[in-house]
Image 1 (cartoon, rainbow, N blue to C red):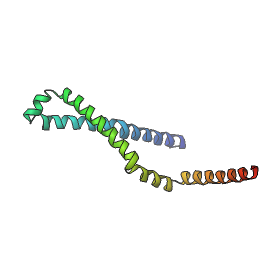
Image 2: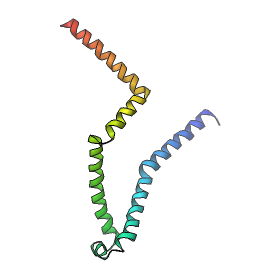
Image 3: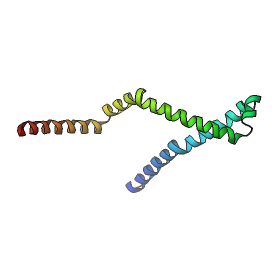
Image 4: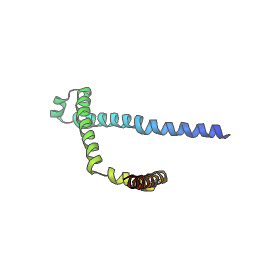
Length: 119
């Protein structure tokens, strides 16, 4: 296998993982969850079965509530949850970020020296 074919294989593998992990597996797992909860939970509770006589009504209601909750939880995570720590760890561990940060610091120091000379 030459380098180009090997590169194509890994590129396709990367696209597969992105498509599967970010999109298809999410849709399949959410659909499965709604079907299982409806079949095992809603259908076995008479009051819930009266509220949601078919799965589509339950899916729409569930989707609206789920969308609101997930957006709210994600927003809270960005503000007060684990996201700040995850970002700091990623920044510290990724060599490119560290190099870029150091380069920006050096540029800022040079600009401060130039500003002092101008004043």
